[in-house]
Image 1 (spheres, rainbow, N blue to C red):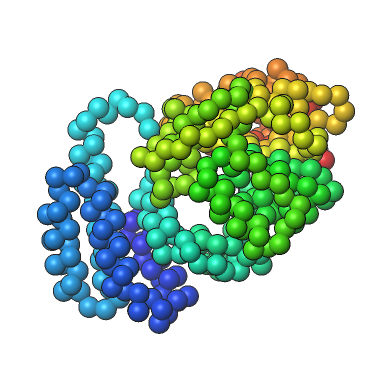
Image 2: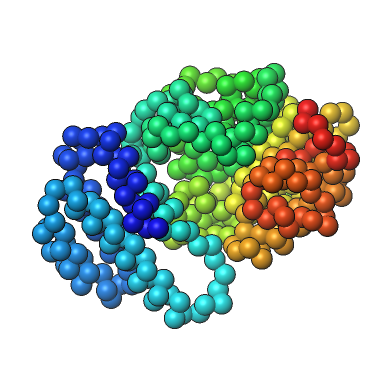
Length: 353
């Protein structure tokens, strides 16, 4: 599987970048070897860096990139084997080699590139960084179909956990007003940059995290996976940290929303607890869109069950699992351990107003 993924990535790069890739080959290879050796235990890095550099120099042309990317797979296998001998009872999220490799390519080769998006919900808009320039279509995913079928015209939308603003951009293209929360300073700068690139004036960016109480919190993140930034101690990963200000949604005192999207890497329940007044105030109550997170499958099942039970207590009982199109109750909540929930106040029905 690793070979297939890497070959596909290299194929796309070759077809899109052509001569540019050839000129970048030495730099790309050096970056790949440096990245691979940094994944290794400290005492093995110098040895493997020397061996891999010597080996790749004997490989002709652009094939060196493919060989160097294979070193990443080898390094991750060595690292996983090494770490499995340590305290294996420690729970943490694991990301696939495919995911890590694509993230590395995005971060190290295209993070400073500004382009017109060629795929997904924001096709035709401008963006800095990422792989949105790759001309593939994602219209077959349930999440894509969900968003394309939701009418946000004239509405106020809250984007809690905005990251680089990919959904923020989409919301702003039709909504009346969007408020986006992103406490991670690196992610927020990119979010604001993407908004400027598209001259969007109907978005307000809030530099805070949201929870069940106001506080100062430590946010942990991996620079290679900036979208996984979290203040949830059970979900935190990566060696970088930032102190962020955290508030409750109820104390923000903003215009009443029609839709609230929440994607905060495991802190979804705490955000909901801090939004009780916003969710239960008289009048048309906001709809919710939540992404599910967890360290492993057991943790995800426990978290989604707690979220569904909390929502039912607020009389939010029309809960749809977007991926399976299943109506969710506290009795079958574990079905939604992976994916997204679309939630409306009141009893379950089959409409999506």
